[in-house]
Figure (spheres, rainbow, N blue to C red):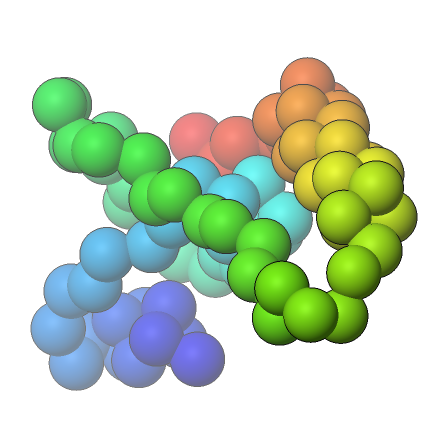
Length: 79
């Protein structure tokens, strides 16, 4: 993992907030700094038009958005 390489002194890296919130750097001796003005990553769901199931895909999207919101609500950011 990139964070482990940084911890060993092999450079710096960019990490998405989601990875930090999920604990990707927990227990590692790293300093973190938010990048002001950074644009958040956009993620989309894609499926073949002919496959149908748009209602199911919309529900999956809603579930993913709710999970993301829950993760950020309870995230423990390292200091």
